Image (tube, rainbow, N blue to C red; front, side, top):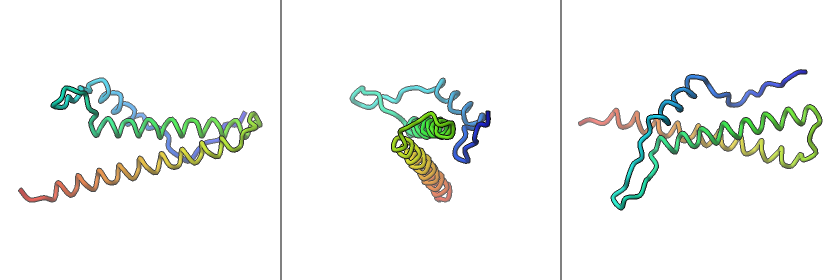
Length: 109
């Protein structure tokens, strides 16, 4: 059996370890009115998880399509588009965060 490889996102072991370590050490941020709020890191981890899940679904759909185990081409096309959009969103937000960090580092005190 030949398993096709996807050129898209593959989770990197180092990133997975980082995310799992941060999740284990995560403490909730409590706002003034006593409600728990998420942090920016929580949002990034959520985006990473969504992109990874979408890529996994896309890979499974591609394998099923190549093996002839599917009849729903519209769903496969939607899953492919969803994976591409999730990946693009994650990369754009990551780039904006890095640019903001670099701008903060350039500020004089």
